[in-house]
Picture (spheres, rainbow, N blue to C red):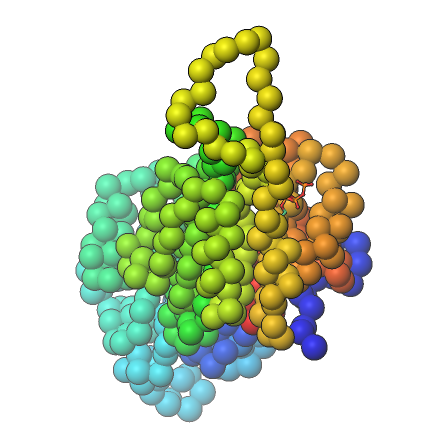
Length: 426
Ligand code: CTP
């Protein structure tokens, strides 16, 4: 029995707990908290990290304690909070060197302009900075400050310097600031910070959650030849399929990408070796490549906008304009998804797409059954500025157990949502 996607049992909802899977299981994270009003958000970061399976040790600056109490933090982390070089109660020395060796990552959130400056210049006058200087693991910094402080050349230079040492900056967001002003400087939202760490450190330490999995993806349109210069095609750009291929490769999967005629280029450099691209033109060519590759795959995602019909005969020479009308006799193309649905063996996962203009959900449900898919990704042409050629998409995922609606977002993020669902089934 295959597991069904982790969709809500029925109805709709917001998929806000998708990272609950233990992506950070066993990871030890030092969370540095500094004196910013955003310090209260550290509670949500701790909760997110622990939910993802991490162990969290808080190190807080003296100014940080003015904004949030160590009691709250130790209750959440179930560990005493470290702030001083020596424990005031019994004089025990807190070894920043040991913390540097213990941690799999250090996150400083919120990080004030002052702490940024101290880190950039090695001013080791508190436990947080000594811990940072002793850190052997990757360091992530989430700045939080007013917009003018953030834009100041000193802050910008300090950040550049810290980046040049290999630290990773989690850029602040724009929005309402504690000063009452609006602009860039607000610490990134806790959920996003946890997601960032998930991506960088998830599972086997590098976010490669699909290592050793083989995934077939079809992308783009197909062209069905009328004569040497004309074809029947559609507006598909291939962007969604390429984003899916890149997301799978980013997570370590070996991808076979069967692409119709598109202008897309694969944009990632490091993981390109994981993507084998096969260029095809017609449905028949895509069908041949997909059915040949499918038996070796763990999953297939049928994202291509395949032409359902082709001209029965493609003319060998350019058809000349004669007469007032012209008939082209069309014959049906093979249904690649349905064929893979028939070939599917136990353990293989099949995902389809449905692009609809009307009766969206009913049509998608029908295709899910007809093609024997695990789930289907529905997008509607009624959502203007999504689907064909756009860089954004707005989808719903429909399985046999329920439906989940997502907000409109860049195709790269949509791809991550889809692959999260696929991953839960592999
Ligand atoms: N598909 C396919 N081969 C085809 C037609 C469709 O693999 N010849 C796949 C698409 O890649 C998509 C799913 O089937 O994952 C649904 O495609 P769609 O064109 O929406 O559905 P059709 O079955 O063609 O139905 P209709 O044209 O009636 O909407």
